[in-house]
Image (cartoon, rainbow, N blue to C red; front, side, top):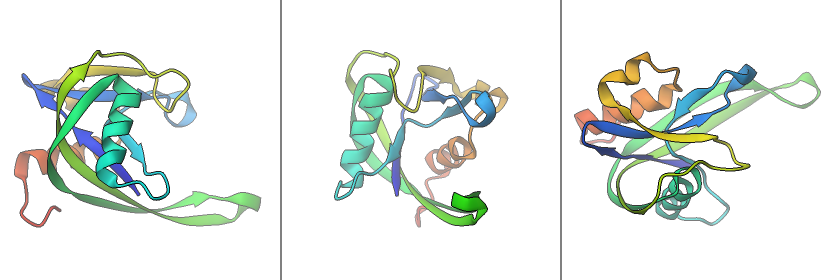
Length: 140
């Protein structure tokens, strides 16, 4: 389980950069895994602060994205992984943009919405933007 934020202002979206597989950096939505017993709302607020330096207010639930993949596991055995990602809309209420040190990302930046398609990014960025644009009643 994980929670992510879509923060859009002035035609730009807040993204974080992850080292990515094989060392190729890729842009991701700010957010991440829930700690045991943590509420998803609290997760997204904490994760955005950790990865970007910003305090945010959650303004809406956009939807849920579910992903099932097979990943390498211990002793060469494949692991059937199921990720459930909750996507929230949020707005920045304070803090200052900064980079995460010693975490899962190394850079945070506002990216022009029209430039996102040209960025090396994880598929969740596109899924989140689709939910933000379309706002489907069922959240998917």
